[in-house]
Length: 110
Length: 114
Image (tube, rainbow over all chains, first blue to last red):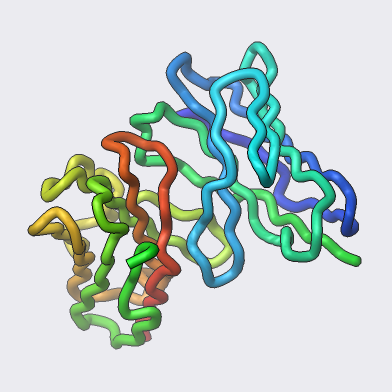
């Protein structure tokens, strides 16, 4: 499984755009990049998944450069409720044994 | 139900006791996963079921841990001779795809071994 590296923590103010970058230098050809969000006392929640270029949904965008050795989760105009831990996972779509790592703890303040 | 249901939500037991944790996945999801999450850490993979069979149990830490899914729906994680180091939140997730895809997690069962 590809090893991922992401910042331990990030701080932001409400209304700002937040970009969390994840490094995955040894990503394999058939690996996908998936991001999950976790609030305290809850299980992780799927945010977005991509393979290359850019993916956008109603809550976030995922930017993946051509070499796919990193990816950036972009959260537009964060609110206090976006305070959570964000996990970057890399694995084949058959990579069910996904390594969550320690994630990035995002704190949004007024 | 609408989501993955896990019971009990909290379990306190004494060292050496036997514990069962139950997971009721989303109806129709054939894939079921168990993870363990310690304080300050991300979820750690334990075991994956596809239908009734354990497709991968490589994450189970030792033979005190066992899981079953006899009818391809509800799953039970069983821990024998519990140790204080087993204290953690045990998360269950299900998926409608045979491999990977979006995982839907329950809220977890918090196990405390005294």
